[in-house]
Length: 253
Image (tube, rainbow, N blue to C red; front, side, top):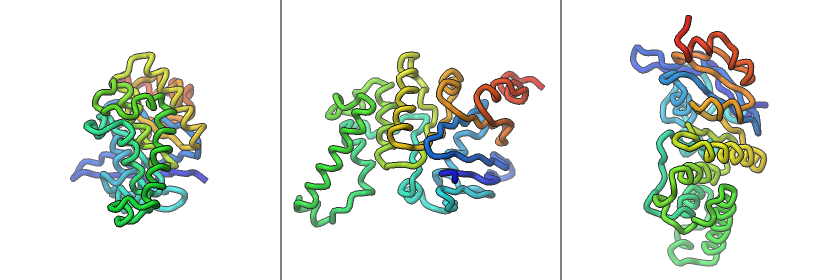
């Protein structure tokens, strides 16, 4: 069974149908690319999956359960995490604290334990710190654990945002233009890191990206949107040669 599936997903803003009939699925450990020209509706799909927008039609199923209508924090707790086009870190706190914040929802100590620093609080804090360090190490960020997030180079901030998303233990990781602004070396490193986290954490990855070399080099399956509708899907090789995709990107008939 697919870990995430959309069925006839759509949304209208007033009289404008921004998305219509979007249907795709993703299995555990699969890396899928959601591509298309600017304004095709890619980020709108992410916003529907995470309750930024409420769909006007269709269903979103996570592990077979409809999550339409659930709040963002509930969706995160159920297993969907995301990053954004524009980096959204807590830049005035440390790198490790950015990751630890994402784990707050799973911490079980009481308010009283936190106030008085009781043994149950200290035990859980040690476990969270250990887990955060392990995640940072995956991205080579452990050496920067106690640096301020704002002092990291741009590419490292991108990695930190992904590490923070992983800290919620997602089943599905949504990456919105993860390679944006990266140089070729950073992009290649990111490709290997995404494959590593897929293999290590058994997480499904759905990504939006305009860098076609990145997409073709990492995705096993592609879904192509244009004007809010799916115009093609399949393997990267199949999609690359699809006349509808070529026309959408190059403006042909």
